[in-house]
Image (tube, rainbow, N blue to C red; front, side):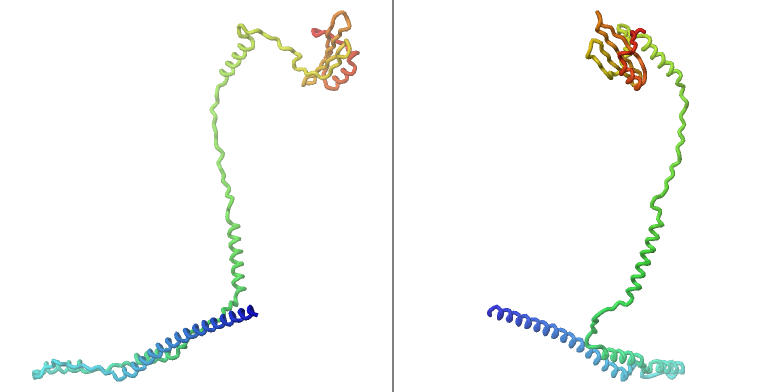
Amino acid sequence: MDQDYLVEAVRRKREEQEAAEQAQEQAEKQFTIDQFRSVAKAVADATEVLVRFLPTLEPKVEVKNFPKQIDTSKEVVKAVKGLEKTLKPQKVDNKDVIKAIADLSAAIKAMPGHMPRTEAVSVTNIGEVAQTLVEGQKKLTEALNKLELSPKITVPKPTVTVQPTDTKGIIKALKDVKKEIVDKPVPGTPTFVQDPLVRFTPVNMDDDTSIQYYSYIATDGEFYIRKVDGSGAYKTIRFYFGKGAAAHDTAWTGRAGLTYTMWAA
């Protein structure tokens, strides 16, 4: 119960504050309107007085130092009469000025007491604006597509001229060096004869009995089978040579029936 009462009190307080703020805002607006109307009325009244005054205005010209006696000479009399005519008061025509002020007064009186308020703005040509944007985007895309973003750069082929060099002397000198190295060993250096079998690689081995067989093959397909016979009073070593991987396999299968010779043969 106390909670409902508190909520109701807060609601009433808020409504009172909103009403007071609205009343104050309305009073300020009314005060501004009244001031505007007061100023407009003062300007209109002053203009109306000025309009009534101008028709009665007749400017007068008075000559205070006009001579009391005038020479009877004709020239002097003529000049004075001309001066009198010039100094004669002229009536001023203020019709245009009066009409302009009267129009101004009427326009001021016709002014509204407050400025009109625009509630909403409506745009009716949004379709035309969208179409214009689409066309502009299309033209921009076409212009960008026409840009040359990958220019072709052609570099002229350089011309390189190499002067011919006489290498005969260099070749002869290299040959002489080779001859000295190969044909003439360095003094004090022993001369070795290369083993012709060094290029062969072991493949098969049969050493279970006193007669043993070993096969070897080179990268070019050449092969040999070495037979070590220990069945006699001393061991003998004989060789069988051939070529081809298939021939090697066949020879190895029938190794016991092959004819073996000495290395020198």
